[in-house]
Image 1 (cartoon, rainbow, N blue to C red):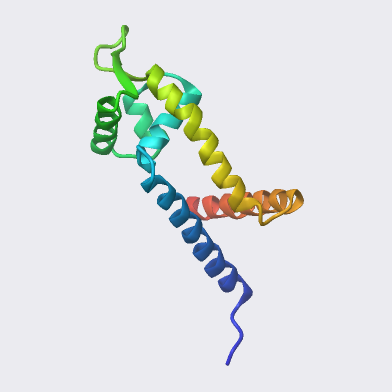
Image 2: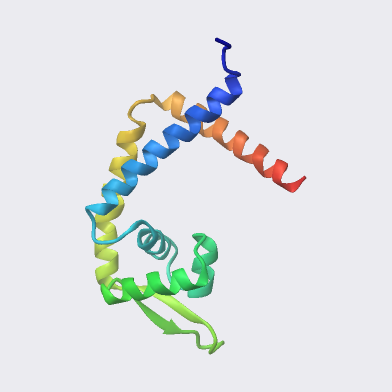
Length: 147
């Protein structure tokens, strides 16, 4: 039997490990009050403050219809509210509520703990190496897309 090209093997391992990590994260979200898309919106508002709703979709890669649905769900849960833009009536901002901030204070710590537990398999030097290698491969893939 012929030995696999190491680059093909690296790609396969990369994809499979990525899928396993995503599965773990999704499983964690099934136990929580909000889903992954809702968390992405909440995390953006929590860390960056009020955002135009149109910009949120672009920043977290959600379509217009999906972002409206997610905003509606979070508003129903009392985690955010809409505020019109005083300069442009066509613009609407999503703003995190106090209940949303309190929820995220706890949820961010839980999420960081889960992520840290995933990377406990590596020491600090290995984490740095992984960051550099993954950045390089991502940047290279972006350059290939531009061709």
